[in-house]
Image (cartoon, rainbow, N blue to C red; front, side, top):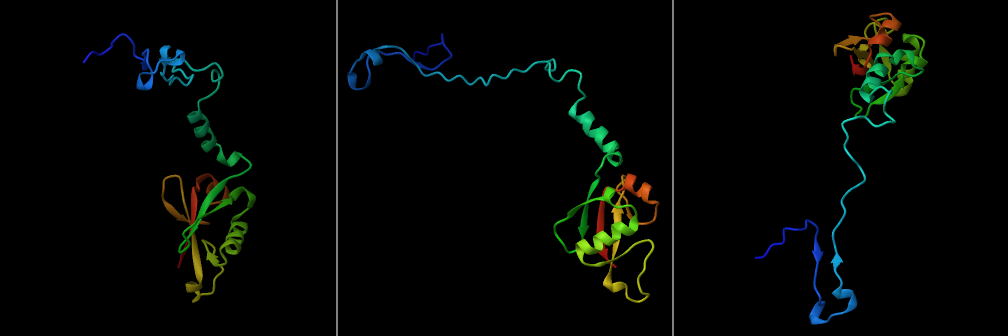
Length: 161
C-alpha cells in the first residue's frame, strides 16, 4: 500500500514495458499528466479593457430607461388563441389609429379600443386591445395620450369581447 506523496501529477515510472519487454522508449520516464489550466486567471481587479466603462448591468438599466429615445421600440403582441406572440415596433406608428390598423392587418381581425368604431350589436366579431404597463396592470389601449402610452407600455394583448 505504498502511496507516493511527493508528486501530484500522474506519471508512469518503469524500466520495462508490457510483457516484460524493455526498450529505450519504455525505459524512459513517461509523463501522462494533463494540464487543465485554460490560461484564465481570476483577479480581484477589473481587466484593463473594462476600466472606465460602465458595467453591463448599468448599460441595460440605462437602455431600459431610454427606450423611447432610441430609433426602435419593440413590444410583444399576443392574441388570444394564437400560441406565438409577434414583435411590433411602436415607434413606426404615429398614433393609435396607425397601431390599430397594423394589428388588424397582422392578425386579420377587427379590433376595438377606447374609441370604438364598431356597430352597436356586432361586438362578438371584434377583439379588444389591452396593454401591460410598467406596474404590471392591464389597461385598455387609448385611455391615455399616445406619448404617455409609449412610455408605459411593456406588451400588448388582443382578447375576444
